[in-house]
Image (cartoon, rainbow over all chains, first blue to last red; front, side, top):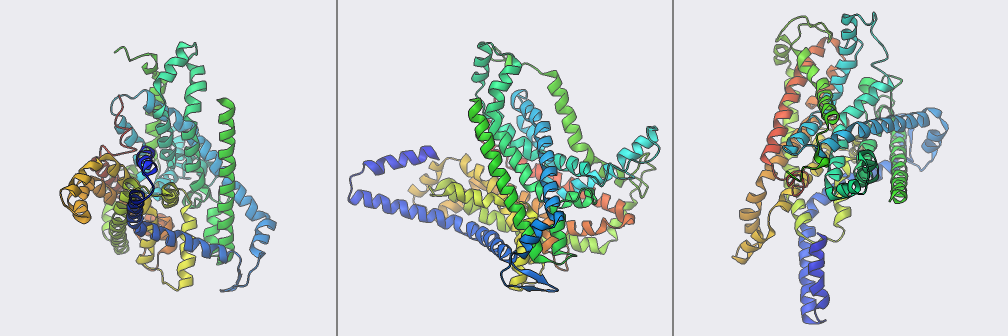
Length: 311
Length: 274
């Protein structure tokens, strides 16, 4: 794309001002218009389907619930409550914390895998990539459900350990705990970690590695000083791609979390469901988005800073 | 073979790690079919015996069939709509110099990362303020948001993968824009179109959280399954149903990847190794 734009902008600049310039400008404009025309249906739909609901969500977060109706006068009451009542802050913090751990676990466990496929698989690379990402395409609900079967009170692990004779009673900590949610999240989002890391590892110029070796670096130093820093963009996007969606996850904590492993998504659902306090649910959604944005910006700034220090 | 330097040396521990990784990736899901053939209400070891009765029981569940048809209806509509919109969007993104292209693409891809629960509740709020009753149409609208990014991401490598000169040749030979598109562009990107259709259908068919918020009186299949999870006695049937869905999803995704081979994950790079 950048090459293209260079090619076309040069003659436009060289052309003498006057008829040719105007003509080419006109053609450019009509081409641009055609391009926008083609993307317009998709973009219009997305704008309507994303911005409108969000705008109303923001507006509603300043309303208050009165029984079965809303008081539509502007009020900061929800935000005040969200800050004052410890349950909201605690749940939000716990969600960020749990999906943070799940993100780190997924990235750390998937990095060697991405590294393996990028550097040590020479034939049938595509086959390996498909094999690693295939489960991701199947129903998220059913994959989480599968973990319930594995971790359940009368599930695979417990009944296996009992039949082997290692334990007498089923372990209760497996299901309905924070660790159950974290394990499942890390497992279910693995594909999101592998793909970006694989792409950035695959892009690394192999001659840099040879150069590092020629200059006397052993495998460990070579990895730390060349491969890891160069694959950092992939690690960053992998982390964000997992962290952002998992903080608001509903299915996993609802099926496997129990009271201890509940996350903010469960509370948002309750606000729109059984508790029936939509404005509060809207407020919590907005706060969740704000927290995610702030953390992501900080994270990106931090990694940029670290990268500058390394290089 | 001189290029097979120390960097390409085999790494035994890494190979073992890779195999364990793949096993752990698939094993939890494989317990579903395993227990769906087990003659017991509980998912416990040791297995008690082989049976097909959970699958037979599915046959008699009218509510499940209704939910299945709802899901198929929504899936077909969403796949057609998102692929149709996606073709034009992908063409615009790859073929025209659009100022602000990056932000536009980024915006369209937002639903891939933002927690879907937020999209779900936001749409729910909008629809209720507008007075639109929840139905399969509202579910479809929600799924279209989820599927459009997938359609565009599948189609972009296809458009990037073929030479623009072919389109220009067609125009030079006197075809107008529409005929060029119809007779040259579309046949060239057709594998991508088919792959996008199958993928978006699968994504819509499996999607739960949007449907959970936006479904009215007619549940989609995942919403129906969610409801069944509360009843312990229907647990084995859910296992059977889940096994079928996962098997079909695997087949559809592999099919779409096969159709669209040569244009995946940046096309130019991933396949051009060695």
